[in-house]
Amino acid sequence: MKEYKAVIYQEGMLGSLLLGESKINPVRFSEFLNANAREGWEVVTMEKDIRRMLLFFKREGYVVIMKRERR
Image (cartoon, rainbow, N blue to C red; front, side):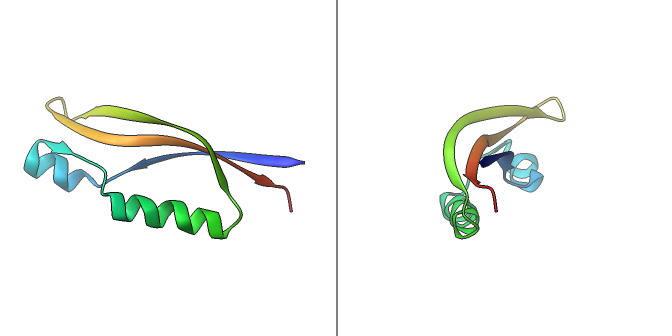
């Protein structure tokens, strides 16, 4: 039996407020994925998502769907 989880990964608001747009830091995103992999999670799919924040700012994020064998 498998179990699934959906996670929205996005950077903090500070980059959006200071720069007008916040992009994902690839090093931190890799650390996030590796931390989940150590717990047995495997990425099934992910979708890039650009969200508006406070009307004028953009914030990049990813919706990540993961699965693992139920323990």
